[in-house]
Image (cartoon, rainbow, N blue to C red; front, side, top):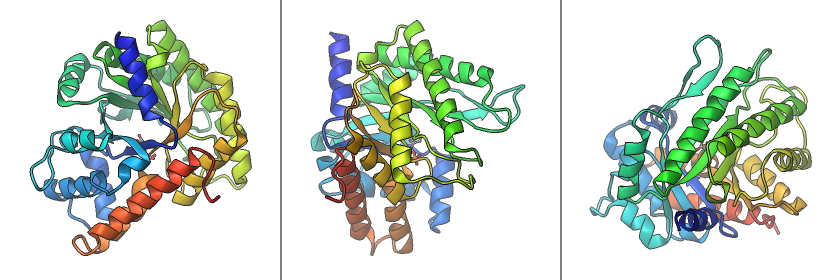
Length: 334
Ligand code: 13P
């Protein structure tokens, strides 16, 4: 029974033509995003901005779910309606970020391990009570001269598996996110190798921890050259490398895969997703769970004139949702 519910939620998250909007920036991360557009990081500004995003007219045409942060899942619209109720009414599934951040991995300079397992069972039960249907945990894998180490990959895979098992125990779909960072000058082949090894370790750990893959979603990074790599590649190369890597390492029984945008430009995030879906033949729906890739244009506009550009910013969010929704079906730009 429980697995049926989990599978149903997971399938709804990747319903045809729909994806996820990630608005789960921690208070520290949103502080940086707001500062970049000259907006004060007050609780009211954070609430107003999240209301702008969640109440974008027509958002549910292309968005199946939104990942919230602890503060946001407890907040309401200016008119006093809980965000979770507004989302439910629109048919947008509430998700929640449950890790407490990537911290330095002791003994391994430059590498991170994600924390947040202590007390997680109780926190998940509380979030389920608030209406959360899925939860995200982000692990960070950094590519460098001698990185990632096996120890870093194992530590993160183990934490992801323990979090995922706890989610399913509470009837919440885990959105398992091992992000291979774009930072660095590595080439696309290196990213391919690191992503493949990481995904294999993650799925091995999920299996060992009795996580039911039918009720889980993978949030993956695309296979790309590092930001500072002199050899950039074209859209088709990214699409083929990404699909091949996923096909090599991700079980076909998984209900879906969503990508993070990871610092790509809006145009790249959309074009890459579109090109991946144009190849066709993948055993899972391949959609998006973009944070910056959904928000950065809207945030820029809103920062220029919070009251005056409110609706224009919402129109921009809608346009990004539509473009990415079309790209999730390989129909962007047709
Ligand atoms: P970006 O799309 O901005 O990478 O964020 C997605 C996300 O939720 C990262 O955890």
